[in-house]
Image (cartoon, rainbow, N blue to C red; front, side):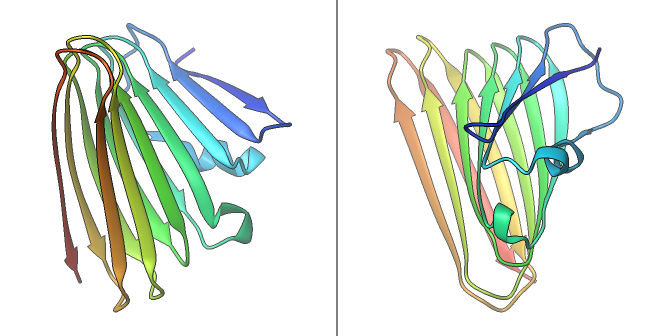
Length: 168
């Protein structure tokens, strides 16, 4: 099995786990998995030394208007996220990084109403080093608000976050 999914109907949380040693040839279509349950929170756990790409489409639906995604990236793991946000939606992305973990993040926004994107990077393991490279393209004429937070709660941690955006 390439990955595991679990859904908690009470909390509306979907957890997708990518175990160590798994090699992916194709991206994980997070939107296809989430569409089945329509969760409020999605947690993606990427174990040690795994390279994986996640593709997500956030459509304009009332149940998905404010969705939270949590990424837990294991030691030496590399995660690439490609997100396409359509309609009216607010997205909160929280990333927990371990030693030498990295995240590449791309978001294409095709809505015309104001958008809010939040990136929170948490380093909770001693000597964790996390790199996040992100971009977004706003294909509408409305305002986009981007908030980034970096929290170093463990000693001897280091992070590098760059998020660029443009209007199309």
